[in-house]
Image (cartoon, each protein chain N blue to C red):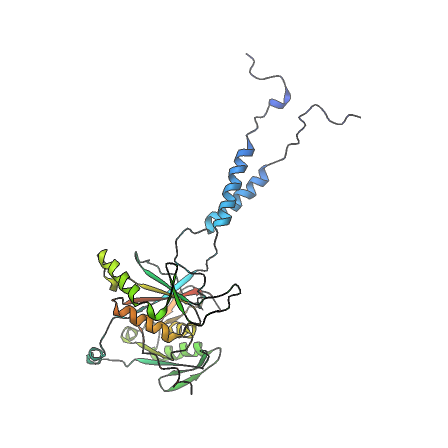
Length: 170
Length: 156
C-alpha cells in the first residue's frame, strides 16, 4: 500500500500557521487596547457615626483626644501643624514629626490604650485635602522597615468642624 | 545560470520564535489587564500616600464618589469649583444631598442599612478639606456613617 507520494517535500506535515497567527494577533491587539494602567489605590477607613454633641460629653473619657490642628495658608497650602499646644511647624518632615509625636504619646505601637484613644483633626476650611489625608496617615501609623506591613498607631480618627478660613490665616 | 533547485519557491520562515514572543506578550497583557469595573474618574488626581493599602475585604456594596475639578488636556484646573462626578453628571459638592437621599433609598429597598454601606471618597488632592467635611456631613444626614478616603499607593 502506498500512502505517500514519492516526493521528498511531503515528509513533514506543515501545520497551518496563518490562521493561528491571525487569531493570536487579534488577541494581542485586544489586550493591548483594553489595557488601562491604573495606579493601585488604597483607602483610609474613618467611622463617623452620627452623634449628638450632648451625648458625647456624657461618655467618660479616660484619655483626652489628641488634637491635631492644621493651619492653612490663604492659597490652601499647609502653614503649620499644631499638636495640642505645641507647634510642629511646617516643612517637608512635618508629617514625620507628627508621626513621631503620636508614637511618643501612645508609648509603643499596638499598646492597648490606643483602642481608647482618638485623634481629632481640626483643619482650616480651605486647606487642600492632600494635607489632611497625610495627617490622617501620620496618625494611623507607619510602614515597617520592610515597607510591607503597617504598624498601627491610632485607628480612631475624627474630624472637628472646619475652621473658617478667613479667621485662621494668621 | 541556475540557482534554485526544484524545491518550493516560497521561502519558509521559521515561525517558532515569533509565536513565542507573541504568546509572551499576550500572557503579559492578560495578566496586567484588570476588567474590574472601578468607578474611577480620570479627572480626579488623588493624593498619594505610602500607607494607602488596598482593602483586604471588599464590601459588596459601596458608594464611590469622585470629587474633583474640571481639567483641561494639560491637567490644569479650568473651574475653581469642585464637582462630584456622578453617573456622568457634574454636581456641585454642596448640592449632593438629594442624590444621597436617593442612594439611601435604593439601599433601603435592597434591605441594606445605609449605615453599613461605605462611602468611598475619591477626592482630588486640591479640594478644600472643609468641602469634604461638608459633604461627609450631608452624607451623615442621610444615614451614611462609614467613610473611606482613597489615595494612590505611592512611596515617597
